[in-house]
Image (cartoon, rainbow, N blue to C red; front, side):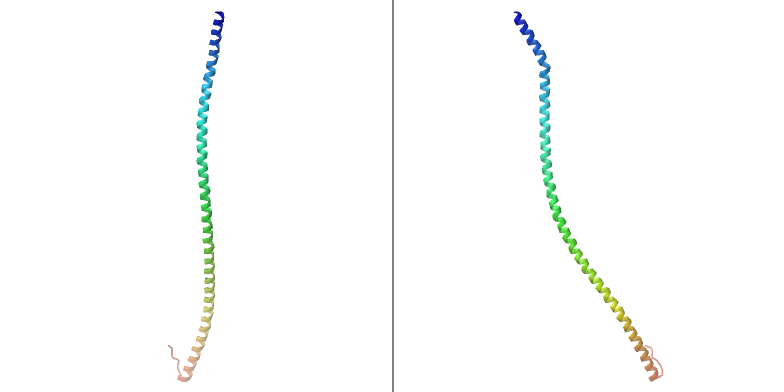
Length: 130
């Protein structure tokens, strides 16, 4: 009987000591479950980010292509600007030549008018003004 009482007392003591440990184990299990959910959420977020990174890479490749097109268009525009510059320079040169020729012709016309006036004066005795 004493053994039975000792067994019962020891059993009760062990149960008393195990109760807080079981409670702690239950808390730890809950924490582990929560952590598993958080890890799952993080994995989902990472997968989403990977998808976004792939999308961004695709966008960047598309932008590189568009940049190449823009560079081509700029190069084409530079060629057109160079051509226009040549046309303007040519026009300015022709305008300068035209001015020089006009000045020469004006001088010739002036001399011819003077000659005509001298002829009119010598032939008719008067100068006609047109």
